[in-house]
Image (cartoon, rainbow, N blue to C red; front, top):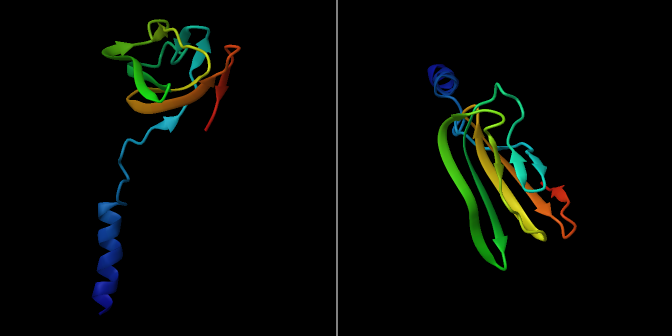
Length: 115
């Protein structure tokens, strides 16, 4: 009986927790200036792709998507028209980690971060 009690914690330590190594995105802001978006302004950070999406008039729209080898600032910036009055989500990969940034662009063109 004592052996069974010791074996279970040892097996748990060796196998780890379920879902421990999943690459779950974390929220990280991007720089938005009008129609110009920069995912990072650090030249040492490497970007591998992005997706910009929104729900407009009840319809899901993927506005821009790209995958590439390696890009760093300023090549990691894009220009994209984002109509005012809608919520957006940007998903991107930076330094082999997945991030997302949800925001709302109000009718005055201000970007409002939301969680």
